[in-house]
Image (tube, rainbow, N blue to C red; front, top):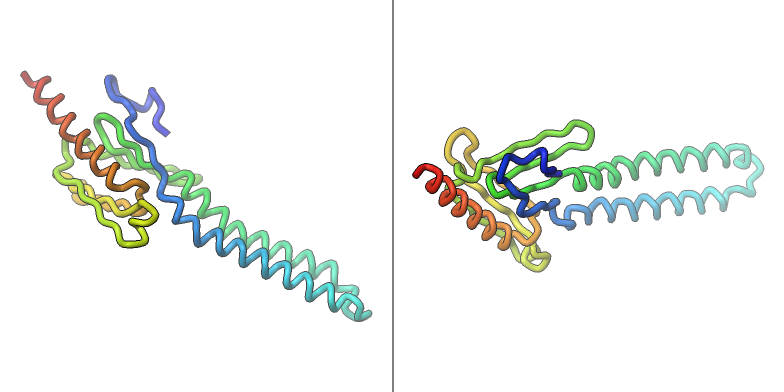
Length: 176
């Protein structure tokens, strides 16, 4: 997250975003399936509890089911949730900043002055959920940057375009 120490003199944070919440729909659905499967297995195991031969294996079986369910929930729910939470897109008055990573963080900055084009696209579902894909073209080594699942993509595109224009005006004034 952008802190005052991370910004250059005169730079201000304009917008901070995470990817749209729709990226969490699949992990939530998988978590519901994991819980349902775990409960079903435990109920089946409880139904067989009366059999004397299986009684001695009931506790280890419950423990194994719980451990497998916990590991599955971590892999298919907790990690995607942390990935969503730790991915940020920040627009400042001078650059577009991308930050990702749970344990190892990585970042990429695009100076606004190098951005030559900003466009967006979204399909029907994206329009209903008010998110989409943002494409940022920049001159030089950065090339094209495609950001998917951007919430309020039309407003972000308009703000980014305005910030690019403002930065060009600011730099032309400094040159005089």
